[in-house]
Length: 287
Image 1: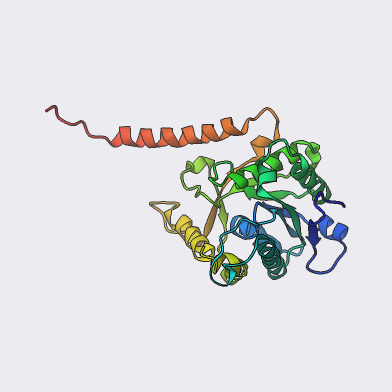
Image 2: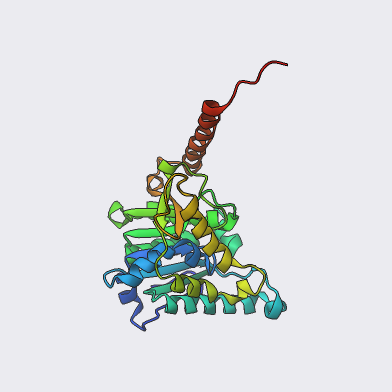
């Protein structure tokens, strides 16, 4: 298949032909930047890692040129950082035994441009080839513009495909905002406690980010543990690590507006907080 950017590429860790790798994929993680997938889609990575019938593939949409840099990377140019970050993502694909790792190589500005159809076109082609039963990506309440823009592109790509190409599970996961604010009935809990050594290794290969001043490895593992403990106030922990997610399947129909969908979830949260306060609030005596 031909992707839009001449610098785009599909890496296959086991050396199989690209078409064969895409067809072997049952689970796809789609991230804006290199390392996003290892943060948001670890639940899918370990499912495929433990089951030969499953195959996990990754799609990284942007080139990662605008990342923070410090220490040994302080004087790296944007072009040099793109090379480093792609190499790190390839390392993760090898460690996690992905079926493929696609690099669409768009600039963030291109993905955030609603008039640019190229990212949607590439995603449509890849999703048509893979036809994954499960997709993990960013959630619409994320506070990073590029993350939300990637999600919008994924939704648009899926809407262009026939229903038999749609996943049975479509999840928007935590990256640049926690999802513990979701009401329990709106919350998808994903067990990510297995193979903690693998989780650490996958996050640890992104040295340019860690050494560059962002300890995503420690922060991500800490958030997963916090999610597991703070999920229930009156029950013992059922797992040692959880990722929280939002069900995105309702967004695959054109009748469902993304903004309205998120606003409804926010209203659920608002009502939950208000109801609890009203139930427990004491009447203050008049002055």
